[in-house]
Length: 106
Image 1 (tube, one colour):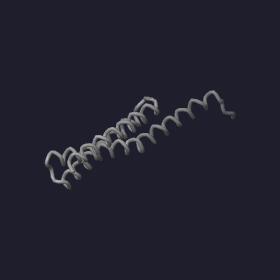
Image 2 (cartoon, rainbow, N blue to C red):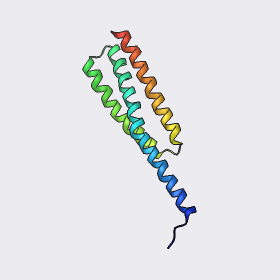
Image 3 (cartoon, rainbow, N blue to C red):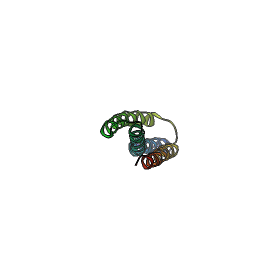
Image 4 (cartoon, helix red, strand yellow):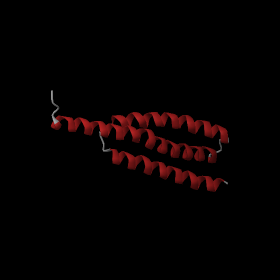
């Protein structure tokens, strides 16, 4: 039984796209969640919450956000490059905002 290369190519391409989405979900989702946790913690602390309470609440919300991002990205039909751009860009913006807010607190 010989394999038809015309059939094998789309299957291989779909597998590579899924692997790229999975990597984006894990690594890009982590970067975005890290930025979210930093920004949320800075906002909560600036709003008057105790530091450790703000840290715990931001981390708990970050865990839920990571799960939601992971599921949405794996199920997405968008191109992996756009997903990477959105996650890394959003994470960088959130981390920068957190840095600026933390500088104003101290």
